[in-house]
Amino acid sequence: MEFLSTTARQTFNIAKKLAKGLMGGEVVLLKGVLGAGKTVFCKGLGAGLGVKQEVTSPTFTIMNVYEGGRLRFCHCDAYRLSGEAFEITDYAGEQNTVTAIEWPENLDFAAAGRVIEVWIEVIDKDKRKIRIEY
Image (tube, rainbow, N blue to C red; front, side):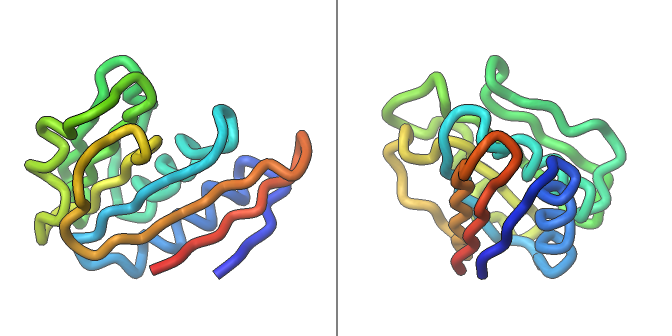
């Protein structure tokens, strides 16, 4: 699937719609340059899963886990990492969890569960091409 997004709100809504169809066990791998909208996409995933807390970037904490939605949402940011995936593998692929990983190319692990790859390409200042592959 491919989408063209011209606002952060559209990116958020594309992810929110995707999340409504998730059943648990999915690992969403988000790829794109710095500032492409990966965290905005994750905020939409959280909203679509019914997360009540604000989904924030885990750049410095590495991983945020949100409970209380229809599924647990694990949001990881591997921007500052290289090598092993440490506790990310504790959540990835769990049946009651959706795991989203920004910068997965920095990690050395095989994603368990149903993998969904999301590429966010910056076309210009206001446009993003979002490609989603199952």
